[in-house]
Each structure stands twice: as structure tokens, then as C-alpha cells.
Length: 480
Image (cartoon, rainbow, N blue to C red; front, side):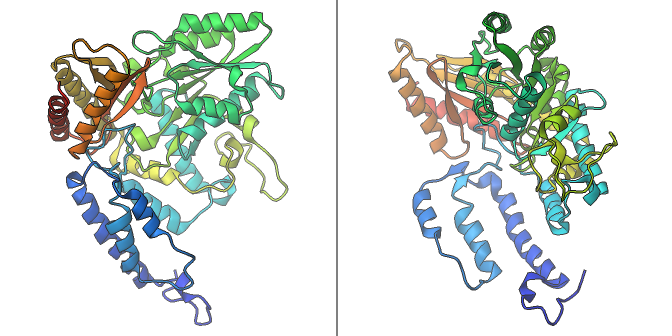
């Protein structure tokens, strides 16, 4: 690395010397360190005045630069505080993302070295590190040796590529008579992936669920038989290892049997729940996931990494290549050696960041058992929540599973309907108004319910006790 830019450079600002680099990083780290240390004391959600803030931050293209300290002030004093505190211990909403600092260090290294990993020949060693990380993820969910895949920006893109691959493998070039099967509790990304892959809405069957919100496998089998009788071509089953609404885990072993019997591709959406395979309870709950043809994972959920870290795993990586590969004269020769991979051949992306380092480095430094212990704690904390909620009068739990539970208050004499929904919405608002935790709600079987999802590596017993205290206080406030 040059200590100083060349004297004839017209833009020396673009190439700071090593001392200037250190000064920038040190200034940023002072802010970052203080921010992370303050996370537990920050409100779990603080978006009031967001519209005014956003309008106040609008500006035209700056012709001249400004001081770095001013930029840090804009970020840390104005923009960052007005947000969901997704990295804090009180964020129990949706499915929490992580923000593991080791991944930020990895991204600094990856972005500063700026190597290209879409083609193996461009950075063989770095591509191998990313391949190691992908293989480790496949090992976590139990896929066999020889399986592989690629990292994405999230579960939605992973599911999209899974649908494209299943379409290619089971239907070929013509697929207007193909049919996909999933649960009525499926994440909306399944329907969206199908549309983007060229399927009509009427080609997706959303099958009903049982009392635990698991897809009805017998009803799915009947739907497949009915479609075959009508001359249609069933091609794909999408099962779930932890739904967003209730955390439900489908009977994956039964779905695997059905898919094998019918010759269908089995994809498992394990974006939320897949990493619980690191625990004994999770492996038992997700039995059968190892038989999937493909699996969606979100390391930015169960591995606590920053948002923008998803993964698609495939039992047969060659199927990904058949679906996504596309030659071009300006590219170097692609790998034929099965030990190596050109990620541009497996995925929709040619240009991509070296996102594998943010997966590889934390696992390499910490080992899988650190993550396993953290996930065991989340399961324990969810059980603490469930036990406490069961003690509250007139509170119904909706089939708690993994580290996610849904619940509502049903006062005596108040039946299902708008009045009950409004009552529970007021309860949710009363809890969140206290600022120590942030919960969200959803609609299950037509009724509004509150949700708790325990997944942040910063959430421990003290914050769960605070959440339960605020849940009780909020219930008393709305007349529970």
C-alpha cells in the first residue's frame, strides 16, 4: 500500500494514506463503540417524527465535501436514533436481525481489499473461504456431502432461485401447466418468487393447516392428485421450518415422503428456524429438513449476522448451475472441477460483494458451539415467556414453537371480531409505549394476535423479565 498518493494525482482525496485511513476508522469506532454500549438503554422503537426528520435530511448533490465529524453527527445523532432498535436486546418484533460486530470487521476487510469472488479464477482462495462457509451451513442443516449453494442478500432471493431451479429441473422450458404447493401460512416471498419466476397466481396452491399451523400433508397430497387428474404438472412443494406468523414447523419428514413419491422438488423455507438445527431441540423439531432438495437460510437471523446475509443451499449444486448458468465471451472459462465453484454460474448475480467473509470469519473465530449455546438460550427464554403468559387470566397462546410465540387476550364476554382485535391492538400499543421492548402483531385465522420472537444474541433473561412486566402492566392499562 502506498503511504501517500502520487504527486500528480488530480484527486488525492480518493486515496488517503495509511495514517488518514486509521484516523477515519478510529473516529468511526469511537461512535460505533459508544453506540453499541448504549444499545440496552435505547428505546426499542423510536420513530416518532420520522417524516420531519426525513424531509430535513433531503439535500441536493454536494459539489464539495464536508468534514467527517459532520457526517458522523448526521448519522449517529440524527439518522440512526430514529429507527427500530433492531440491534438492541428489546427488539422482539418480526424476526430480529443480528448485527454481530465480528461480521462488521469482516465487511471492512472485504470491502477494503475489494476482491471479486463471482468467478473462481478471479480469487481462488477467497472463493474457497466462501465455499467453506456455505458448506458449513449445509452441514448445520444436515445436507449430505457434495451439497452446496450460494449466499444471497436474504431469504426472498434465495427462495426465488429455488423456485427457478425447481421449475427448470421439473418442468423444463414450458411451465404454464406447472403447479406449486405450499402452506397458507407461507411467507409472502413464496408467492412473490413464483410470480417473478413466471408462474401465475392460480398455479400456486396454498394448503390449509392443522391446529399447530402445520401444513395439512394429506390435503396437499389430495390437491396434487386432483391436479394430475386435470392434466396439470405438479413440480414443487415448499415446506416451512419456522413460519413468520407463529413459528410453525411443518412435518418435514412427511413432506419429504410426499415429494419423493410424487417426484416433486422439495424446498424448505428455514430462513428463521434453520439454525436451530445446531441445538438438540431444534434438530428434533426440524427432522426431515436434511431430505430437502433445497433450503433457504438467513444467517442474518439465526447466526446473528447483519441484514443482507441470506443463503440458498441445494442437495445437487449442478441443478443450480443448469438453471442459472449463462456463458459469455468476455468471461474467463468456468470451472469444470467439482471441487471448485463459479458463483456467477449458480446464482442470478454476476457482480456481487464478498459477503462470504462475514459468515466465515465469525464461525472460524468462535466455532459453531458458541452459536448453539446462544440459540439454546433463545429457546429457553421463549419457554419462560410462554409459561408466564399462560398464568395471565384470559390470555390465549397460539401454538408456541421454537423461539416465537403468538398470543392474545380474550376477555370474558368478548367474542371474536373487530372489538376483540381493537382491544388487543390497544394492548400491543400499551406495551410498546413503555419503550423497553418492541413487539409486533399479525393476523391468524382472521384474528389479531401479538407476537414475541426471541432471537437477538443481546436478549437475555433480564430483558425478558422486563418484557413480561410491561405485558402485565399494559394488560392492566387496557382492562385485563
